[in-house]
Amino acid sequence: MGQSQSVTVLYVDHGEGLGGAEHSLLILMRHLECGRFQAILACEKGPLAQAARSLALEVCEVNFPRLRGHPLALLRLWQSGWALASLAHQRRAAILHSNTMRASFSTALAARIGGRPMIWHARDLYGRGHIGGRWYPWLMSRLAHTIIANSHAVARTIPRADVRVIHNGIEVERFHPQLAPRVARAQLGLPETSVLVGTVGRMQPWKGHHVFLQAAYHVAEKLPDVHFLIVGGRVFEADANYEQQLRHMAHKLGIAQRVHFAGHQAEVAPWLAAMDVFVHCSAAEPFGLVVVEAMAAARPVVAFADGGVPEIVLNGETGMLVSPGDVLHMAEAIVTLAVDQALAQRMGGAGRKRAEVVFSATRYVRQIEDLYDEILSRAAYEGHPRRAYRR
Image (cartoon, rainbow, N blue to C red; front, side, top):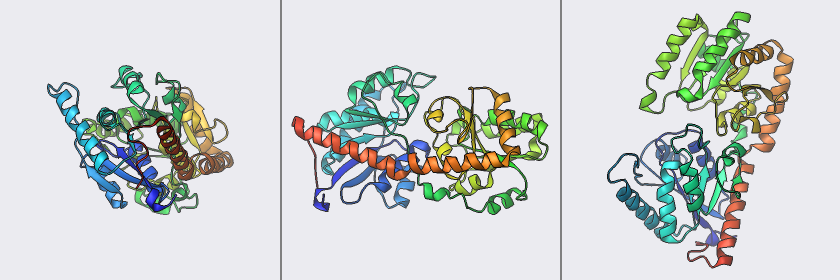
């Protein structure tokens, strides 16, 4: 397909923060086959818009309404839907691809107004304490033309049989196992010989950093020379006190001198390279992009066997999975890998190979491109009123 036949895809994300969903979206937009697809991002002014522009991606800033408890919620939803429909019409978008819950209602409305197919990219475990409960996936199952889930665990929470599971991918080459750990360790004041057990994630309670400290306490009882690292900063104002609570907890457990807080890091690869064992403590994780990144860095993973994580980590091969909430067995797994370096290296190497084969950006993007082609072919066959806009 030549440049004159490229298909425009309008991606929609409310862009309040820059988490795994947004990083996954940026990877998708960057790696779309040039000449076949043109990517445009509709999002609010904020971190996502800034990150997209820094990658030379086209951004159109729009506003998305907060629907909960606002007396004019429906009016605002109608306005944002028409604004997106107008943008899609102006840019001759063939497909609307919604990346977040807050943006999906406006996207669905815009798709109905303009007669365009809409993809809902589901990235949460709905119904497990989720803000949308079970009504949100029920409603979106009826509004979306096509649904992508980033894991089978997520797909099981959606009441529709034809959900397409496409695992997120990463730029594996950025997490080369040979990255020197010296820089990160030097910032922590740690020698290269010290065993470092770490975790990476936003400063939010559901990410389980407090669980990591509980496990660290039990590990420290058995291995007095091990240090612990938490990489991540807060995204939302509501989580402003969480880091302080963690620091207080470390003092209370008597391990404060061995727990290091690195804060937000734009590039996590050097910090993963500095770790000997990677630990992921969040429960009900929809996917776990950072788990894939740790595997790409050839680090053995210890995590809970919950959510989408068992689809990433092969227990006993690329890491160790324990029952959700079982801190003692998590600590035992960490001790095993910290002591048995040969086992840790073997699991790390297997994880790297799995990341290259199963979770590469190329594989991820090609699967979505194939889905776009399928949608457009179906639209053309069905005589879709706005079918297959090509430039």
